[in-house]
Length: 334
Ligand SMILES: Nc1ncnc2c1ncn2[C@@H]1O[C@H](COP(=O)(O)OP(=O)(O)O)[C@@H](O)[C@H]1O
Ligand SMILES: [Mg+2]
Picture (tube, rainbow, N blue to C red):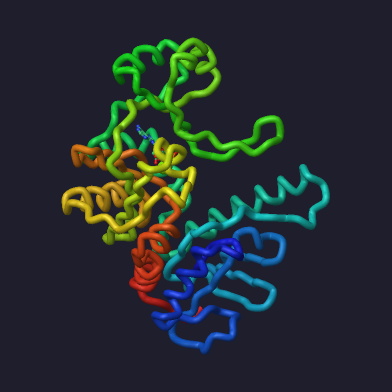
């Protein structure tokens, strides 16, 4: 089962790889083979799909009716949570009542998914949420012996100047959760910011929102490492020619930024795979910096982080690895 909203480009790529491996998409014109794949989005529930979990006389049924077909959910062997939307009850007019219906649907889905005897990529939702938390996974990375910058998570203004001094005046501030947000109704995204003396003067504002403080790590290149089960793919991002992307490559200044495959030292690759497994996941995207001295510094783990550019721009076969992982556990007719 691919659990994702329609139009998800990553899901299209994995579906193509599944088809190359003999799978067919349920409800499409694909010739029917031994490996049925269902593409479904949580946003279809409760609006356009019906789900029934019933427990009667020691018999358990988990049924999904998409409107065009009925599927026995207990037969699902693998689930890939790519980019599912939340449950949607668009037909309920009142906003408060709609939110209530969607909450009921979400709790029901969580329960139903918990009963599936399936392999999950990147993991079950609860594991994914915990692993994604930077405070949690940084501690795990340190336990596994990764090189990690001195890091402070805080909303205490008194922490800022000492951290700045310890860093020799080269400190960055980052968000604890890299979500997009709105300021005065306009969309906003906070990038990694080099802390200046002006920030030090207005440090009282830190009280209102915790941040991450780290010394600035010099870069030879940045890495995005994709772990799929035991497999590890590393792409390097060389942003040194881009004034915008040098401090944070997500400025996507693609005319000046170079992407390519990167050969990880075996020990670092093993540690990346171990970190993903130890945080309870089967997939993750890790951000690392390779310093001019050749050290591999761990920044963070994204439990459902993007791999599209690792495949498209660095040429690494991630969609095929995901398809292979999903099919490894065997299949059933649904
Ligand atoms: N300590 C640091 N030194 C230098 N650059 C950094 C540092 N931390 C983050 N960056 C830059 O900012 C980007 C985003 O930071 P990251 O830790 O991956 O958090 P997130 O992606 O959640 O915002 C990194 O990929 C890197 O380009
Ligand atoms: Mg990142």
